Length: 236
Image 1 (spheres, rainbow, N blue to C red):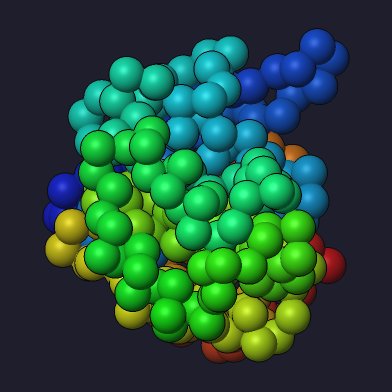
Image 2 (cartoon, rainbow, N blue to C red):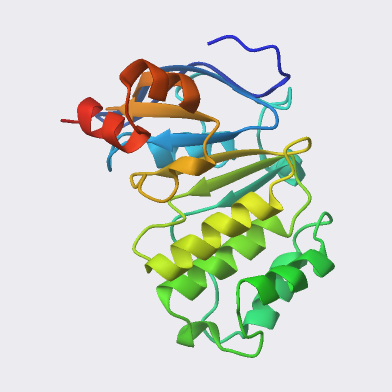
């Protein structure tokens, strides 16, 4: 799918093999700047592996990846905020201490934005991480990603296993904090019920390959139904 918008992420011939398992097999993908893209598929389809490669944490077996024109690696981590499905927060820290700890790794950290998001996410900065529910930990993870001033944000299953109230708050926060002229978001999920309104484009993965890639609007027009119903058709 061609676009006239500047390209933020470009993948060409990406493959990844773990011993005898082919995790990704020939991914070609271009993601335009200023968009929110849904990376969709069931567990094992390759979503997390693809995000880790774009973040520079995993090296492809074959192919090339460019993020904002550069190969992603630890040297240019300032360009990417990556939110993994499993957090690595220290349980003995408070919420405030956690954000202070994370901020020390990034020159682009915005303390005022972190404080503002704490309020909108209804998190008590004095509360210990060990006492946070899964939904509240998910909100804390989102603050850690969006308090940074970066052109690319990668969110791996941010709604996984959390309560409806937290899902709603996270979606509202993503929409509120998203700076469309400056940022691109790639969000992986296998749940479309609440997240569908977020997406400008969607990529359906199956067994490490792209099954469908188009704008959300065009897909709804082509199939005559919601993205959630398209999911059911694709993975039936």
